[in-house]
Length: 246
Image (cartoon, rainbow, N blue to C red; front, side, top):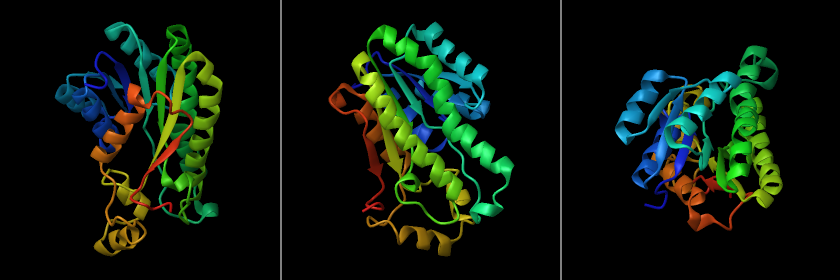
């Protein structure tokens, strides 16, 4: 019960890593706001973990505001914010990625963190405590070719995490990031371009431990960084990657 009586908002929690984080947080005692653009998926996970479903497009300022307001109405506080929602573009040479896809990647992966910070940081400052966890990627550390703008968006998340950590530390707020390697999530096929045994073998050959990351892997790492056990850890971008970035 490392997160007992904590309120946590997890974006993109209707599937994949976000669902794994929501499940782990609930198992450790947290009250979880399960936010996802897919309302049915959010409701399913919220029902499973005894949390609160919140339909939200994280690139929309009003949806972000409603999400945080729900946490305050239902629990009276926000202790943890996990900025997990993310998208990618299909593998392509950088000059061939459409402007529409570029804007979508930057809005969901980058702007969402800015919007969430504008709404949540004043609350955390008033409380004098809180944790923000941004889900970045190994792509921000060791970029794969033909995922250029996705790589760049995750590099931004890592730098933003460190900048946020420095600025917010005097207010008792910790900010960290996780860098997962490709995992068994709905985005896997998009990263690979096609989900075939050959393509999976190619990706797995770059991961020393020889497997993809799982929602449980991310849930465990997120739980540690958001718990009081990590009270001296801030500004860290921790790889959960089976050795991929070595």
